[in-house]
Amino acid sequence: MAQAIHGVNKKLSRLSLSYYSLATQIIIINLFTAIIGLSFLVFFNYFLLTNNSKIEIKAKQINMQTNEITTYLQKNAVKRIPQFNEEECKRLNNLDKKNQNNISFNCGAKILSEPLLDPSATQDYLFSKFLNLNNHIRIYDVNLIKYADTESFFSAAEVVEVTIQELPNDIEDQKNPEDINIFTKYKEQYFSLFHKLQLFFDNKKLLKDSTDFREDINLAVETLKKQKILSKIFKIDNNHFYLTKLSPIIINNNIYGIVIVSGNLIQANPEAALTSFNLLNLFLIIIFFMFVLSTFFSKSIVNPIKILSKIVKIEQDKLIQISNNLNYPIRNDEIGSLSKEIKNMSLDLKLRINELENFAADVSHELKNPLASLKSSNELLLENKIKSEQKFLLLNNIQKDIERMNRLISDISNYALTQIEIDGELFIKFDLIELIKELIQSFSNNIKKIKINFKYENNPTLVRANRDKLAQVFINLIDNSFSFSPIESELSIIQLIENNSVIIYIIDQGKGIDKKVKEKIFDRFYTDRSHTSEFHSGLGLSISKKIIESFFGSIELSDFYLKGYNGACFKLKLPLKE
Image 1 (cartoon, rainbow, N blue to C red):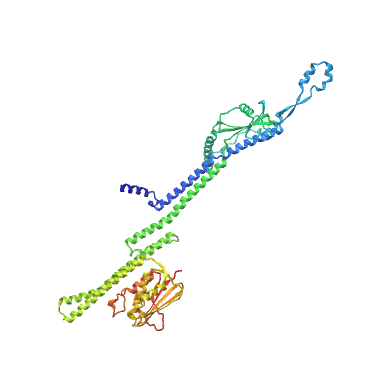
Image 2 (cartoon, rainbow, N blue to C red):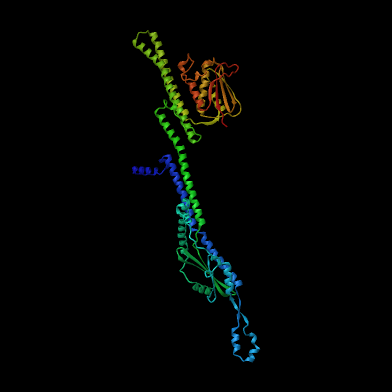
């Protein structure tokens, strides 16, 4: 079961980008971005193809023309038409001549008919306004007699006199398909494909509302019966869906004719095709430059990381011998910061290794002296050639060497533990003045009855450090000063603020420290306590310096002078925190 779960987790981990190299990750991200862009492009093209605005425009045009023609004919083409009075003349021929002479003025007179649709006015109106339009317009009267048909008109503009001549060969050569631009071919092919797809979607959309084709007479009869506007879509073939609009000419509830306007709803949309074409080209250009630039920038990212990886391997194999000649990438970005941090970490590691080697050498040196003394004393005791008084002195020396070694081992352990704690310590913000006051209180009942004077400013002195470790430093320094100070003397601690830093001076009234050993006193195992060396390992000041430096501060033997205090003066400096 556990193996199955592990196998599933392993397969799922391969879906994570971290499973692949950086170059592959960048390519995958680019492909994913391209797929998203392509999806939006397809969606936008689908919107263009399924929402052909030309169909709606064509339908509105047919409706507007139908309404315009119907309104005009209702106002201007329905009227009483003058007619010749033939029936009156026939009646008079049957009367005698006397009566004929009396009413001869009525024979041949013009009379006005009932209101009718005037065919002449109808034809003149269509001829003047709708002759050259691409819609098919027909006008029928109430008796279904066709008064006008735009397809039966013949415009003079359509008759052009031409002279047929044989085209020169050079003109035919100019139409050579090979001379056509590649981009033009590509554009034409795209427009052709777009038109085919649009035709497919238009057919699918119009097919839902289309009906079987019917003749005008049948539609006109239906319109006369209903006396309402009639609208039909007829499918002629895949490229022709005709919208036929029938509108009755009605005045005072009387029908005088029917207006029929038809037009093909399948309309090419070159504007949409051009928009789609431009978007596709823009998408291809963006994708091209995105891949080119990402390839270029990926090298600028991956190559320095590979160099850093190689450097780390070299550092692991030959940490000290070769690493000094390594060229770390120098950049101003995050990779440059990483390079600096790795370099600093390498230098710090080498310093620690050197320090460890030196520490091991110092420990070995410090332990050899008591061990040599113990060995010598042990050999003398084994030989049993010394007097009883000398044996007692020898045993006393052995005891001192053992105590010294025990204290030395304890201090070495404390030194190593302090180093480890410094690396993992947690900093807090606290008032340094309060810390010093607490420590002074703990030293108030000392054996030598040394008085501690503390002078400080009343302003809060906030520092950021490990409170316990900093207390250890002050304890070491105060204890060190006590060991060199006379009985019932004084120790002065002075606090000052300078340039956003706090300065602490610790001055005793002892014999002081020679300036020649100003820097040497902070070395490991160094001490000038020749008379009390068995009680001090010489690690106290070294530990104190390590701790202070870990707080980004400093400690040194200072030349600060205070009247009445001629002993050693230690100066501590720590940065203040707001």
